Length: 466
Ligand code: UDX
Ligand code: ADP
Image 1: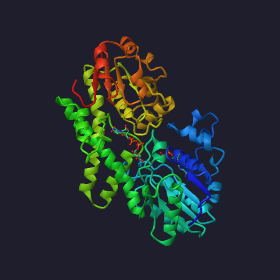
Image 2: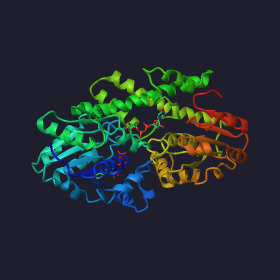
Image 3: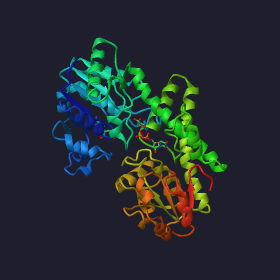
């Protein structure tokens, strides 16, 4: 079996950073270099103060402290790292296309292609190239074509090794993975490459957790796993709307159905809608691929998961407007949370962005508090929507660092992220701070209803009638 001494990972983001840190930590004999074109990001990964790492993830800074400078390196010297590595992970972003064919659905593979071309140009020895980024099926073939046709006649073996880590729990998801999927060719060199990658994970995971498949199955499984997970959330969210109209309580329904071992309890928390960099993008890819093959019923089926998610965000915003007597114009609404889930500073596709956008359409004044998301990020998310000018966004939205203070003279609080600290706030003081009646809209169902009712709040939560 090919022995791997040096690994290079292209892309130092939410996937590349944590994954490589864990590999370096568990494989002290392998030198791991993570490279990125973004110099600021690399500087942050190298920052002496580990609280400044560009990715916030519980447990990450401890692992980086242990490995950085020993066998884990962060660098902008991409070519050098490619040249020296036996195995190259591609972990760059694959956002949804915002232009041309497949706009709004297909994955934009331009960053992947740039990487492939760069590897082809630089590599002078055989390499195993591992696609880590979430990719629509058959991307490996495209990478292979580029590498084989533009390279220096060295042998490239392409593997698909999709990431199943969830942000906020990435380190544990990597350390105690349910499974590792490795897709590759069944040729002798393909099998050897799969074994080499399996041996890396074998440093901390048993054989039975490492699944080897053909490359297409591996690529498709990633999209399907995310589509199934997101489908569960949209399913329970669709029921939350029904619960709000009846006397049913979505949490009780969720518990009752989750106890059926065939259904299971996970991913049945009704919420203001799923976000994150994967679910929407991967389902849109699935939809696009199905459509490409003329499977319109299949694509419509999966698209519905997204449509329910959009509906859920809209419904939450509409409920705020109608509860506040059909107008939020000039009213101060405090957002608790901006990240797409707790324990991450990532805001990609966060429901908060879309709820804010809908309320800003109604001329609300929004004050945002999130324990980990920067002011710069919040404005960038709003500016990216292009609904309003940058000036308007800064006029209508304020970002604060003091969550209780922020509630002074507020009409309502909307909980958009399930950060634990929100439960521990002094809600009595918050009540005193606010204008009356004081509204709380809990998009995550995390606050203590009895306590808030007793204090005098008008407390609404997803999936329960008022
Ligand atoms: C997801 C997949 O879980 C992971 O396997 C894949 O590799 C990447 O995509 P991630 O997006 O990081 O991970 O987070 P996840 O925990 O799946 O949450 C996604 C969204 O769904 C969040 O906005 C979360 O708040 C929401 N969610 C999750 C719910 O609304 N209800 C639930 O019951 C679970
Ligand atoms: P993910 O969640 O998939 O990790 P991110 O956007 O957090 O996505 O990270 C992807 C990283 O890949 C970014 O830091 C970006 O700068 C980097 N990147 C994109 N294209 C290239 C490239 N051609 N070479 C090196 N790094 C790249």
